[in-house]
Length: 179
Image (cartoon, rainbow, N blue to C red; front, side, top):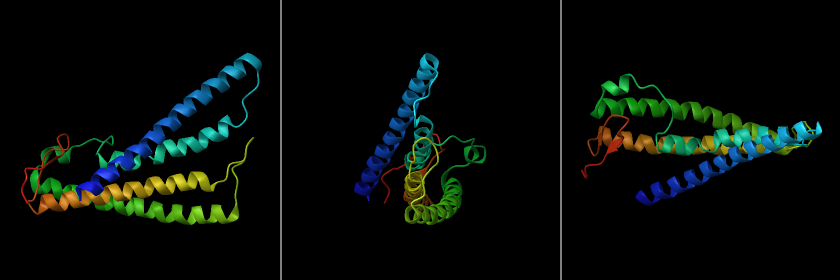
């Protein structure tokens, strides 16, 4: 299980790195486009279209890492009052709802990917980008989120069974070696 955990962590970090590179590309393209417009009065063709596709990449590919390492932005009120098994039960409920929501998104993304790929649809603009590319990014990021949540479900069940202790969210899971 630890090898799978480490392998997934590496895969999620690679996906997040792609997201970071996409964000850097958006910044560089936008800077170049604005500079070109200021200097010549003309835009660089395709910057708008590529930025839209890269925004999908930046948004969805890092999702797995964000959930896997519990890095999402949130306001914890109830979890700050809980510890141990009640907190594990709340985490389990949170993961179940997340799997349901991301499962629905994965289902829709799968259908949309299939339609876009078979229909050979293109995004409109100065350059034409196949719509299946951003749809595939949504699908991959959503699948990563579901996989991360499944691992969190396993951790929550282990805490409920008393095999690990769970502390406040800021400190995360506490593995005291109990089996």
